Amino acid sequence: MNRVSFRPCTLQATLGKRRSISTNTARFALPPTILQILARNEVDEKVTVTGWVKSIRKQKRVAFGVLSDGSSPTGLQAVFHEDLGERVKQITNGTSICVRGSIVKSPGSGQDKELLVDEVEILGECDPETYPIQKKTLTPEYLRDYTHLRPRTGAIAAMVRLRSHLMRELNNYFANQGFTYAHTPILTSGDAEGGGEAFRIAPVSPLPSHEFFTHPAYLTVSHQLHLEALSHSLGRVYTLSPCFRAERGVTRRHLAEFWMFEAEWNVIPTTDPRAQTVALCDFVEGAIKGSVGESGIIHGEDVNALWQHREHDSSSEDDRAKAREAVVLAVTSNAAWPKISYSEAVRELLKSNIDWEFPVRWGSPLQTEHEKWLSETLVGGPLFVTDYPAAIKPFYMRANPAMEGEDETTVGCFDLLVPHAGELVGGSVREERLNKLKESMQSKGMDMDGERYGWYGDLRRFGGGPHVGFGLGFERLLGWVGGINNVRECVPMPRWAGKMDL
Image (tube, rainbow, N blue to C red; front, side):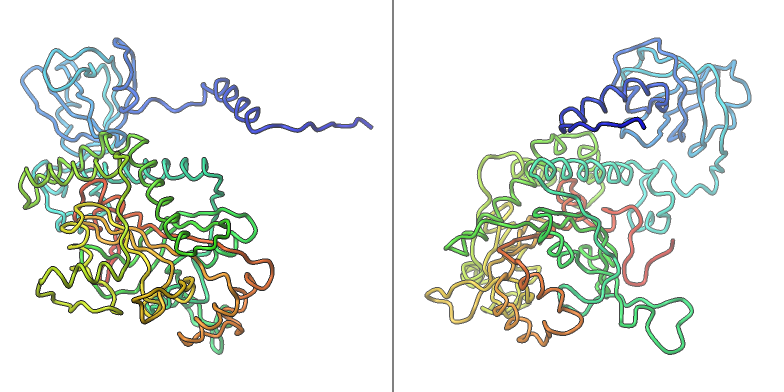
């Protein structure tokens, strides 16, 4: 019998092999996209492009069309000469076509290259009288009724690409930090936040006498608890996954279905628990600056397109320029983002002498108007607010040692507030002490020894240790970076109370 021997293979060697294989498989590559064509230096290159016509201007002997395949905010100008005949007459805005021709230097202004079309094939006609996506300016409210077509607009297409870019750069950053990406359940038996705003699920045809899972099941509002379980085996884990919240609010900051970037990891013990919160804030700041600023995303074409789209809102050009400059500075500057405690935030709010809609008092949650003032007026940029009262935070946050001037227990946690987006990230030091966790859960009417949360106690009973974590609202990050005012324009197909068309 022939024996097969195996030899160790380093990560570097594996990556090297993958690179060589990719060269050998070039014949399987897809045709270049418009983005790739525009990025090349070659001219007189023969190409085949499929896409949608964004606009077309027809003259007696020639027609000029702008073709988009969704890969770039910049379309490709296609020049159709009269010898192409009747097919050019069929082309209207929205028509899907396949064109073959040569890439040449453009003699006109507005573009460096253009496509001289030799052949054109109509793939899908588009009636200009009924096509909802006209060339004129369309309001976000109008486009929300056509979520299946609105990605053909420049702003929504740029948003979808920016989501892809941000996801890629966050993945790269966390891979370099030694994290493992994990898939966590969407169906869950409990409400991680304890807010009672979860969607309960049931079969379309209800079972006659019992639950499908033998107990109530919900769509998850957070992946934190499952990530904690994985972190007790894998050390550093994260996910980017959908979450669901049955909120009736219809504000510009809320969706029923949204995406959260969440991470959990083990940390080295310290004699100063509050220092863990500071270190956690610093890590989150580094992750955002690394994936948005150092990666170059903040200066990318899609971010430019999104900020230019803000010309249609009610803010002045000067205000828009200042807002964008502030975001660029925040993610590229070496200056650390400031940190203040919840108690300090309350004192600053009281000192402002503003007649708040929601009165400011120690022990009450900070409302949107308070967070807005703290980040936009007091600081003028991102701000970490730390060490909130335990009574207004979830059960899993680690209690801080008592400090002079604090009459009630606070927990090692933070909220990251950013201008115009509000709370962007929330995180905490997790309570690893079994007895303290049990006390915290009992104070909130939860039974750690019961069927629902017994497994969570096991993480402390069987080899638990200090750990931390956070959750970042992906749509809110996108809105802050891209200057998008409403979270419904930060996701391709938004869902909110009373609205889910497809």
